[in-house]
Length: 120
Image: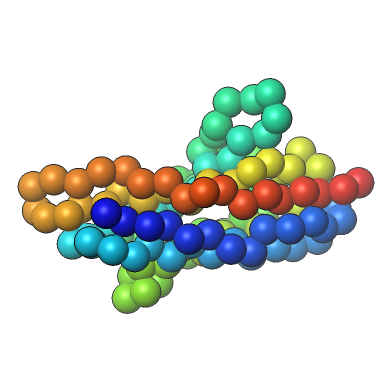
């Protein structure tokens, strides 16, 4: 079993910044990828950014140049620095981790979500 604990959400005015954190704990052999998704009311969940263990960082076009994802592999933690926030970034942000419990099997785990609200 693995738990993902997110923190750092909140309310901010347009142009402001927030930093999200997500720490994974439990039965972890490795985490090939960790990342962030978001879901706005009435919209499907969408990828924001992910980071693989070798440093690859795919971003959604809508956040390119404004958001930066990073990882501390020793702490099993992923961060999302969000700058120049826009009202359209308002959503619940979910951490997701591809966790391997051994070399041969693993699962995707999700955090509980943290609300980010950007006012104009």
